[in-house]
Amino acid sequence: MADEMNITDYLAKGGRLTNPANVPPRYRAELMKIMATFVDSELAGAAGFADVINAGPGIKERIAAARIVLEKTDNADRVLRLMGEFGANTDRYANHHPWADRLPRDTAPGSHRSTHDMRLSVMNYPLEGWADAVVMNFCMGLGVCVQLREMTKVSYQPLSEAIREILPTEQRHAELAEEGLERLLAQGNGPAITAALTYWHPRVAAIFGDVGADRMAQLQGWGLRDLTGPELRALWQDQLGHGLARLGLTFQAA
Image (cartoon, rainbow, N blue to C red; front, side):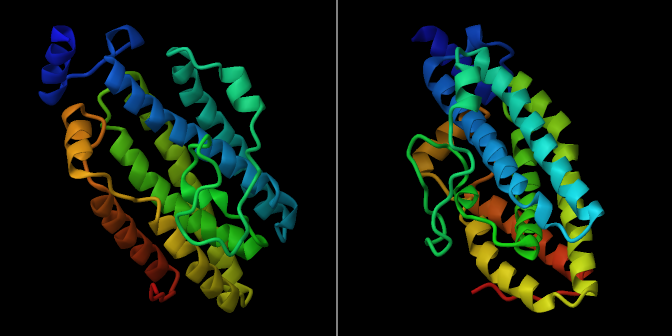
């Protein structure tokens, strides 16, 4: 207990942990949740995009979708290897789970499919055609980057280093989505894009849920969180607004 208190003080002063042997049990539990949420979301996202590769209207679009599938799977593998250092059965974890499963399309925002699945709630909804997939990737791509910038500050150094390497890849996914939206707009798909924005906006917004004040203070003290959910959501809303403005789109959230 004294060692755990000393580590807590160390973390509160900005300290970093570098291997599983130094990690207190409660810190470990929260760290594993963070990593599992990332891994599950990346694998579920890859599975979702795999289903729409052939919906792409051209070779360039199909290459972009296939690239996203490949890179999200690779990003998941990087963090899954860190989970393996804590004893996770990584082979079973990655290969014996229904990553492609989704809730019905009309399920309310913020819903979760399974208590054993740590994917972000937005990854529980099915994609419906190419325009829908591109809009989802645009909205969620910006959201992922907001979350990953937060994770680059996490006090478990191997994870923060891995996320710094992953972040440019996820930024490129958001850029690919913006390029895809430009092409769709040029082809006269404005109404489909607006409909998809109406659907996906509240579902992406729901991933920035807040936690109780006491738990948030603990996570901040351990260096596992910095900004609150509402603060992260505000950053995402701002970046989404700028992105839509670049495309000449206006969107009013419900």
